[in-house]
Structure formats: C-alpha cells, structure tokens
Amino acid sequence: MKSKPDPVQLDSWDLRILSEIQADGRISKSELAKRVHLSASACSERLRALKAAGIIEGFYARLSPALIGG
Image (cartoon, rainbow, N blue to C red; front, side, top):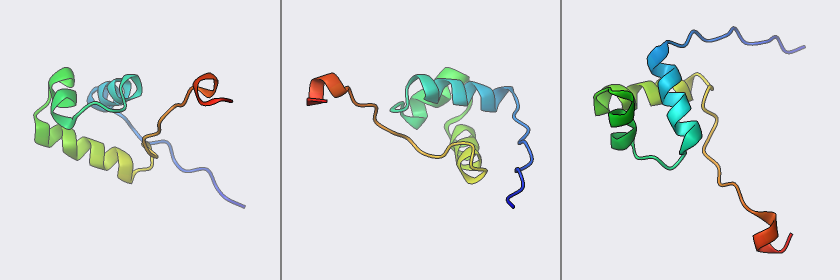
C-alpha cells in the first residue's frame, strides 16, 4: 500500500511563485521573478525545487471544447 508523502513546507516566496504560475502558466522566468520580487536566479532555483519535490507536476494547455468541435 502506498503511503502518503509528507507535506512539503512552503514559505511565502514559494506560495507567491505558485500563485503567479497558476494565474499565468506561460509567464517567463524573468517576469515571474519581477512579480514575486526575487532575483531571476533565486526564482529559477525555487521553480526547480518545486518541480523536483513534485509540487509542480507540469504545465498544460486548457482547450475550449466548443471551439474545437467538442
């Protein structure tokens, strides 16, 4: 039986990053860094860590079924 993974401790910087990428998954790393008030390198490292921890599973396109005949 699979055990639940331990919850990851997120700080305010991580939460800001997650909020921004949820609002705009296509945001550039440099724009994300500006919006969350971090250096580009610090922001990139935090994104890498969030991906490595499995918190960010991927980035997806949301399609409109009505516009593609669905």
